[in-house]
Amino acid sequence: MIDLRSDTVTKPSPAMLEAMMRAEVGDDVFGEDPSVLALERKAADLLGAEEGIFCPSGTMTNQIGINVLSNPYEEIICYQGAHIYRYEGGGIAGTSGLSFRLLEGNRGRLSAREIEENINPEDIYYPKSTVIELENTVNKSGGCYYTLNEIKRIYILAQQHGLKMHLDGARLFNALAETGEDPNDYGQYFDTISICLSKGLGAPVGSVLVGHKKWITKARRVRKFMGGGMRQAGYLAAAGLYALENNIDRLKEDHIRAKALGEVLSKCKFIKAVNPVDTNIVIGQLKEGIKMADILAQLKKKGLLAVPMSTMEIRFVTHLDFNDKNLTQAIKILKDFS
Ligand SMILES: *Cc1c(COP(=O)(O)O)cnc(C)c1O
Image (cartoon, rainbow, N blue to C red; front, side, top):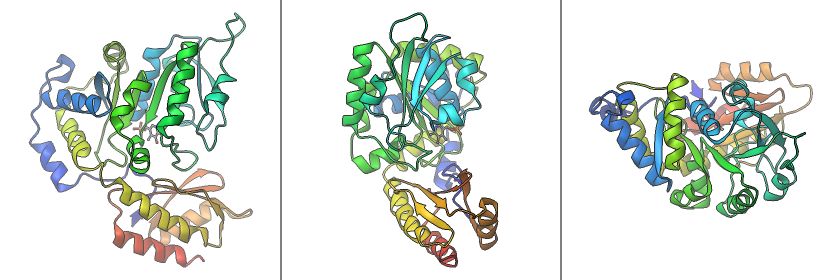
């Protein structure tokens, strides 16, 4: 079975497992796990941030990042398809008590201009606009990415209006594989950045939130009350360290395979159009009258797994456990539908 439902389906490689088995560990709630401390240091340094905090999931790092930057009754500005809005179980409303200002963007990428039009004036009628949240790459629209120049413009606007910036960088390294920009340049533009180790980077579990020291100090308290304080978490952190050291440089491969897959998909009879393939996510729009469940079942029968992204959008994601041999096989399966 070729599993392209998500880049979260990867399993640790033998070398990653070995790194995990060798990990030095301690009680991380006491701040005594050397592997967790090393991962937090490495992630912060890599992204040009002061400090980092290791958490079980990207949902938690997003929830914590936004929580430390805001107060209840305030408003967060983001894309209407943002993960924090669509796929985190409504968490922001509960954990931070914020209202959402949802924008369309250009395939989910917000511009400084669109954001500026949606910052509330200082008036007791309106919730106070507090945080701008960007997602890079943008999952829902098919993995498109920002350039640092666009982000810089948004940062300048945020500075002018006293707004905070959070980045959902679940797939930030996929974006950087395309732009060639230095991750170290990112830290200066965001108060908090969440990165996932368990997506394209191939670790079994974990995300890191990085940012200014004052935010990460606050984040330790929030992580605790959310139940995210883990004990000998160094076994997991070691996988994350291995991922950051070994699995960033190869991401471009996933993008090349995704492009090849997108081309073949566009010729399938059940497909109307395929979104531009910018990184490792391929989204195809089904023709009218085609039933998603039928297509998914037929693909599965032939050995290929995908997921629905909406009622008429099918998604394939390439990843570390999908090699050229798998690609040839997946192309063969899709060609049966052309
Ligand atoms: C996967 C993902 C997350 C975090 O998901 P977890 O499964 O909680 O780790 C956050 N944002 C985006 C855009 C994602 O794709």
